[in-house]
Length: 255
Image 1 (tube, helix red, strand yellow):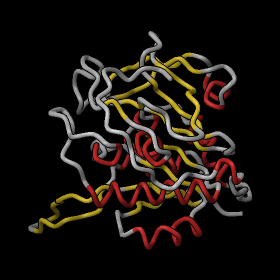
Image 2 (tube, one colour; image 1 turned 90 degrees about the vertical axis):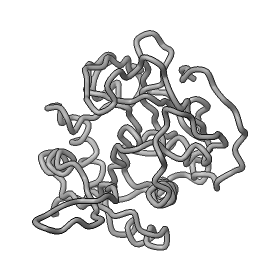
Image 3 (cartoon, helix red, strand yellow; image 1 turned 120 degrees about the horizontal axis):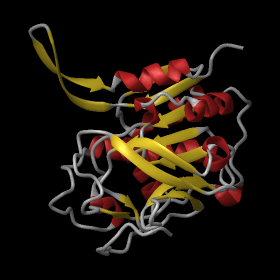
């Protein structure tokens, strides 16, 4: 059997090569390198209309939802705060549809940074838009301690405490349907990792394993992606988008 094919969500942005400046599908090369090193074949996915989602889910063996700019707060019933990025609505729309379809199909998923927030909102959850002091330099990864539940998939893979590269200023607030907290900050106040109930491998994390040398998490994704697909139980199937409740949380509390 050949290598499993792992899709990696990309960003649409201006890029330059030679004398040309054009809108392009871009992705940090660290994602494709770490997926290849973990034993899978990487493919970068453009933010296309959701009509292509079924084809992606039917073809790919697993997915990495990559980091990037903040989700549009309107998707979870809030107005955009001063510290929240200008949204990329094309990417938001595509990735939410892709996340729901992938979970419904039982596709192995690793959601990183922004990807964790896509997972939360896809399940009907909300986010804290800004955690004051949690990320001093948003464009730079810094060491970040995370405590993991001993009985969680992440805890069994990585141990109960890890130091990881991270750069996030948002966090899940109200969890969505079928999500369980698997990791949190050492003070217990900020959710740092989620797992999806009833799925063989569907986890979301705030840190960026593609920026480090620890391949265990990506290797576990590749291993899950190499196995025959097992659709999610009906009870764990993602819910259709529901009308969110407007709220302004004060902190990304562990929940």
